[in-house]
Image 1 (cartoon, rainbow, N blue to C red):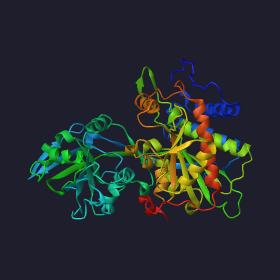
Image 2: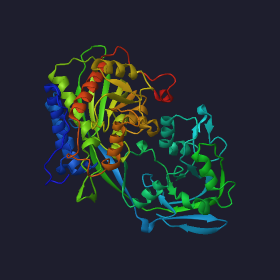
Image 3: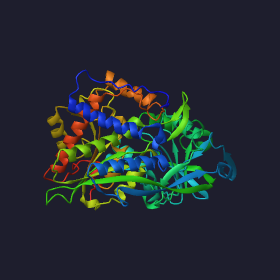
Image 4: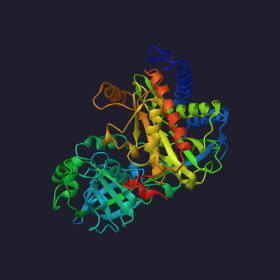
Length: 524
């Protein structure tokens, strides 16, 4: 947002109850502070991010929450910023003793979230979709010897695998290969997604961020991670292979089974990485429970406080303020804390409010907190996450990611009934949002988790408004304080969220995943 632009456009309903209006004004006031130009987009590890963290900590303190970090309300999180020196790095293929250098950015790119060994020389095996899901009738790896090899696979979607399970398997791909002895991996874009390689190639000069604690790095031990341009894959990798890449890609586009086989080539790489250590902040505040039998159990409320910082100028504005993504969710946490304390609400379980860092870098702050919670991990019974809940349309539906996975669904439906709102699953299930925000870090620790947004019906005017936001404002400088916001929707969503917190904190039994949920396997 440019400072000379002073008008804030806010869409208000004609008749908003006074309490709802006051509630939404408090929420908007926190967004104005967090998404102000002076915060410069709250990039993870920046001075401005720390300023935002301190603002949230002060709000938690003013609301009467007890410090629940390591240093007061703050939990420091160490990161490494990883940069590749392309002038001292290279990729090449070796076929029958002949070396063919690859052009970085045209033929292939390194994936610098991986640790990348200084040098690799290894055979390549094509592993189809690269999936190990025998329970869904799909196992690409059981007949392959991956030891000492680089695994190439198409990141497509075979038939019969639920979207969240597929997305989780993609996230865990390297660890799956590593357990079988692989030293690296090569990915190709999903069929029809060639723009992904183009975008990756265009942005390849940027540094990537990882947790400094390598044991928490999903790419830990990955000596070579690279992406190959699908348009050149046949000529580069699949000449002489049993099946060409064009045919494999065509099969993958319709979810057909793919063969697996050794490729008649080796890959050689040299990589020069520079790691810089930085510190960022999670912010945690505690509202103690009141029931002697349940107060040592914790419901964790999360929202990420980071955004993407300063970027390419758009209409003269280079500050990516992140008002909806996710100052809105963080402001919600702060206001719910105020409401609970001001109303003297007595909850049986303790509630832990956590504003996490590093979501935009790969859910890193929540990954760290879930691995090192400031309370006993076994005592955490649920996670309720809010990320970009988008009160830009009327609030007539509460959309819940994870509704089908655990009995938190019962709490959501009771809360929805209490405030007179319809509860729905995601109308865009192909987006697989259940494993794409900070709740995923808790899912991997076996903790029942859900995320919530303002809901809409598919192919409705409200859906179009959300799609327009994603196209024009999501991760753009225009996600600022000048955009239209439905304040009545924001207040309504907060009432529903508040009701849900009460339901989960006061339920008699510990939440649990449904027996048929794939994610029940992570329960401890």
